[in-house]
Length: 255
Image 1 (tube, rainbow, N blue to C red):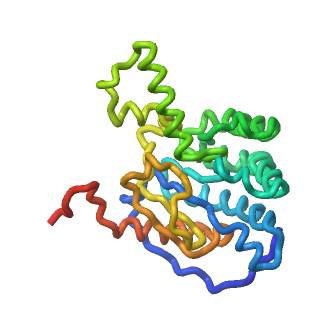
Image 2 (tube, rainbow, N blue to C red):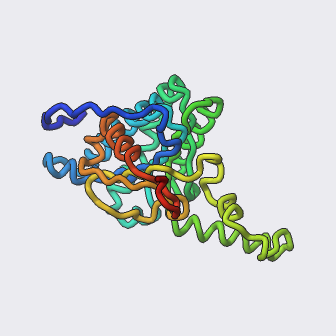
């Protein structure tokens, strides 16, 4: 829909198909800057970013990724201009109306985490329809974080655990990390609740309140290209970087 400046063809990255991360999470950053660099309105970047979601979803599925989590709309994004927020609220409707048949074709199941009850009614309907339409898919889970915040998630988990303690269902001494895991919004993604690889596009190097509990031992890969320029080869590059890391989980590197 929107023209892009032609760039040199991206290099091909070789990756080990035996070491594909099970769960990849992506902070999709740079839509606005991509548009501004082309003298287009910010919403044009979001529109192009939607097309990228489809391409990257299919690429991840073809690589054998089990869960792809995408940070689509944060609890803080409501602070943006009303026109932009309204456009962002329409994007899930456009995306699912257009791409659900492709998701079903690729056996991709839609999942959502976040407080979607605060979304406009028509957006909620589109989300629930997509979840239902892909419910029988058994391949990769495409997990959208919508009206999601990591601190809000931890707060809600704590409230649920406190209620269980107050009703005598749980003893405080019995609380473990697994207890919190089971009360997180990502619990339904088990056994792949925690991302092994977290990617952020557009060169920014921060978490922006995304999956704070789950990324404790994730590998972070920060990439310069804006989200609309990200593609299957970009994903392979990030996976290649991940595969050359030594994940020690607090221990020592194997000799």
